[in-house]
Image (cartoon, rainbow, N blue to C red; front, side, top):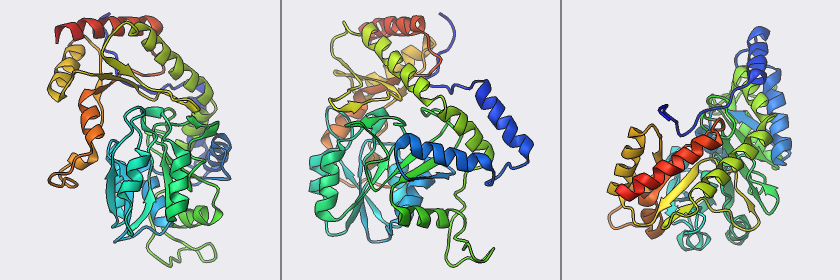
Length: 369
């Protein structure tokens, strides 16, 4: 094989093209149009919530959820240290402080025990991230929320369709936030969605999403709002993708099984977990290599790239970033795992023979590192 295999690429069919063309031909190309409402309604049904609100992207979805819940300057919000930086930045946008909890060694999601250790009188919310498609341990997290009167915002950016005890993520906390970036399970190019059963939260977020303009008087704004709307064109793409989501998830799970079979005899490695009572959607196939540090990981990735195999590293812990770094602060498990983990090609269009070849090259490359 000589072609370059990317980590991820979207799956676009004639259905997506047809819906997008219909949206363009309708003339409703901005934030009004039939596809917005259809996409929101169908997504709420898919997740199992009363409400879904389409937004411009996952990051603004997190920010809008936080603001709608009243998170403000002086508050603290606990987030996992191992996540994409948007989770922490969205907290910072409100003026609140992100507090970084360590991760669970098995699932790589936020550590329930460390959440409780990090709670202070200023803590107002927790954002568990369903990392790489595996659900966080939501029952004890919800118990902590009840005990300390905290809001739970599920970051579902990487986990569309994942399940915890037969409940879809995004339906368990006070709200869920999804991303539809081009590499996600389903895409709208850019885009996001807030899901919730809380009517008050939904109405507040809907109001703030559109410049805080009141219903009763057009172009009358009673407070500072945001332009966080999704376009009708994006929603058309999203609806078509949503109609295919079970097919997409099934293929993602099959891709993981091919990797699992292809790498089963390799010692000192770990692939994505799938804990009992959880359904992982395997957004990214993960490979954690026990004897690796950051230098070895980078060399390994470079060797695979030279062979035409794209990879990406695990996220760096947020607390390592210059704007969040504090002297002496270390979340032990997050700091250990990030150095050892990479994401292998995980796109929907992958074929079994391609994955067999990738697995073969992974084994050869590991021997030579």
